[in-house]
Length: 149
Image 1: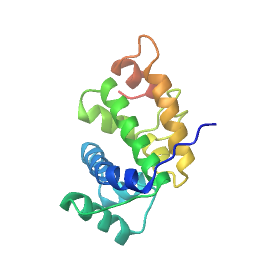
Image 2: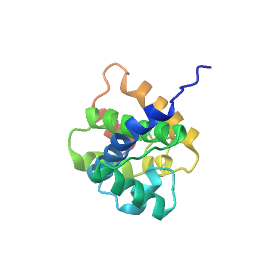
Image 3: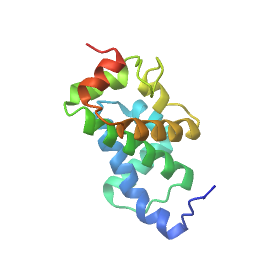
Image 4: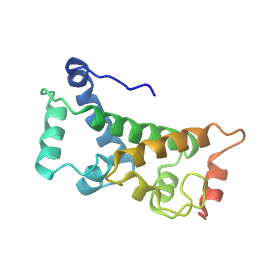
């Protein structure tokens, strides 16, 4: 299996963008700070606040490889779902309600994304990416598969 190697300079260069992207995802999904922390893998509140402030103020910031992979997965899931569900309210509904679709199997997507284990979020990303590429999948079908009105 291929391991992604991120040297210190690369991690420092992309960490600010990763935090800002996470905050934008959380804003789109209307999550509070606890929800932001959950997406990030539950860092301690002072750490998360320091990361957020550093990113927003353009100060140096360097997250771990695993944290960056998790944030990348969350952003990729957001992008994939946004392609299928153009309306923000539809994305929020999908995120917060149990989904019968093949990606969630009855679970609530936000609960999967909030799992403290990074591998769960990374696997969810793979599943969503495969699902997004299915021929004929539309936002309407995503909502129907999810059991939403």
